Length: 158
Image 1 (cartoon, rainbow, N blue to C red):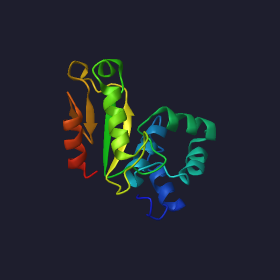
Image 2: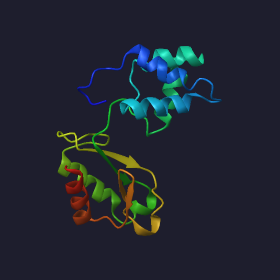
Image 3: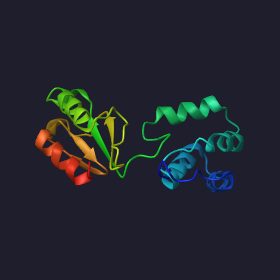
Image 4: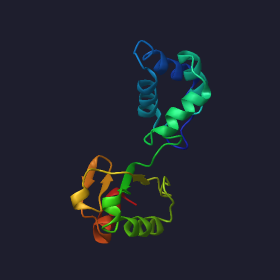
């Protein structure tokens, strides 16, 4: 679902929610299914989910905000995550992140004007010996310096 795409209908949301109600602990599968379908958790889904699972809006909000991969708005065509963990910070990840955000004119979770890249912080990609680390979509990249970051951004169309 892009920013200009029409919002999903209540019946579309109910269909997705209903397909997962038989599962034990259905909330996370429902949220993943909605995000897979629309690129985010549409705000119109909240009343449907709380009614179907008999949970409060606060419980739903708590789960959505606890897991950083759930979004309220669709991401760009590519998601670039920069590791913010201590090992990467020790080898320059903070400066790399600041330079990248400045270059793109974005803040964390922002998307480039052309919709190509959304940039997000991540707390450890498991490449502590090869920091600074970043992940473009599903590909993890180690020893990222400004040149490598520029190549990643160019590859993503930023």
